[in-house]
Image 1 (cartoon, rainbow, N blue to C red):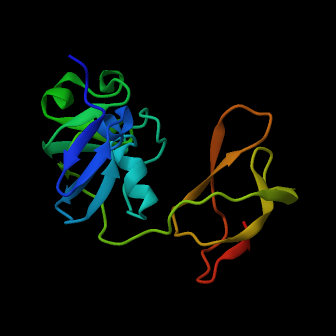
Image 2: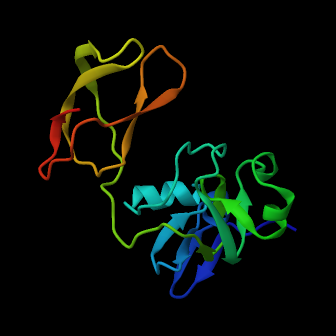
Length: 187
């Protein structure tokens, strides 16, 4: 039997494609007890979706090693992007604990997580910059000033993941200057 080339819809015919059948779906993620909800596509982690929408979701490493984004799956199903067993205990796994940075929704989900505030952070963005000053603060701590291609708005506690051309991987650095309401051209 040959697969149909179109799907009959209400008042229209749509071409059938692998992507239309199996492409990313959007799911609703609800967080308890905060009441915060947001949409997440099935091809991104729950943490990525939260941060992209400016949700103040607890996290640190974003790769599943620190455990800062642990939460309890109360309803729904997730897909593990990497195996949780290397960071979570057997008891946590049996108790429904998941890592938001390594979990993608498979339909609507409800997660229980403390520490999520019902406020929005400035969303992550991409910036280019150039080092304009370095200063030794101690024998092993350095201050680096970077001039950005555009002003950045950020909240206290947010950080920059710096990617240097020719060097593999990103590294996270904290902002040492205070946030400005109209953005900062230099960090």
